[in-house]
Image 1 (cartoon, rainbow, N blue to C red):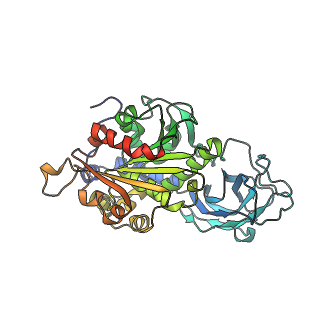
Image 2 (tube, one colour; image 1 turned 180 degrees about the horizontal axis):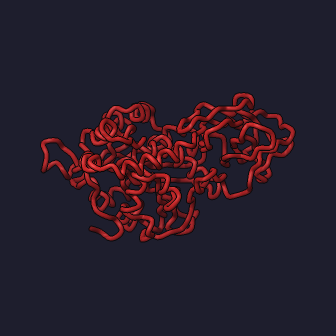
Image 3 (cartoon, one colour; image 1 turned 120 degrees about the vertical axis):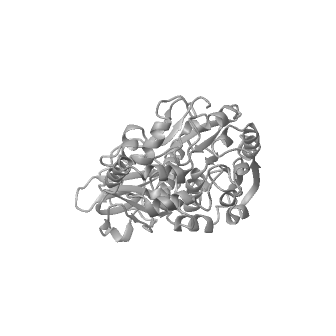
Length: 422
């Protein structure tokens, strides 16, 4: 077992089969999901005014009623998609150009309201999508949206703010197998005790390209230790996504986009790489296809590398959906043929994203079905994903061990050449 990485995860089907025999884990999962289900999600696009200035945008949701404070808000560096998290209730959703960076609306700054400012009902655990916000060219009288000047986004009631840009080491105690399991069985507690977001291993350096590593189910950032150690640190710096793997993958993808938006507002990086393992590839692709005009509007280049990703899902997830007394939302998305998979594979990647698909087949010697010990090669090589890949590379390694393979590290350096600093 390599330092900081943890043991290879059990195949999901075996894990679920073992845990279905006992109820304590599922009791904790159900309790945590009830906490998360107190919240709902708001999504849409902000479009610019005709001939508008290039100014940051503040998108907010405020409880219906005069003088209410913003329940959640986010700053965007340019028009594009947004994602807000609010307790269940009725909200007005709006956006304005923040030309002076005050985080408050001033006279003359373009402003708009979704659905004309009518209250929008947000139900527990539900997403209200399509709340588009077209900004008008003319300004308006100031409005009071109760914003608080804290970093790049608001804090959602009861849930802690995301960890965005916190500098850590790979030996951080939060990056552990125990916390990875916590993210699967107690996602609300994970958010409070561990913290989701994008962590840094060093302060941001504008001379180097960020490489964001995105783990999979039962994973954590230290799984990428070997790949990170072999990065060319003269040209690249590692960023680490961390999230509870029980949460629906569309929600994780939207949160990933929100974290990247906050970092773009703060740093304005011109190039980016996404390196994702297993389920992290599904999350990352969902982010990319859901935000075609987002970061691509400012990036010179983006490289997307997926490693051993189950593009066709996993039978173990279907077993959990069919037999478990409590079902994690991520399992529904991972079940073969899910609407989530159909959507993200049926939607083309944005033109600015160059996809390199790595697959693993190290478990094939023990089975008549080609696999990496966890995911079948057929799932990793879904034709829809292959059709949009720049290159496809195979490695004789297991599902977790592939991240330790020197050949993968060498291939990754070649994949990253397109986003290396000039």
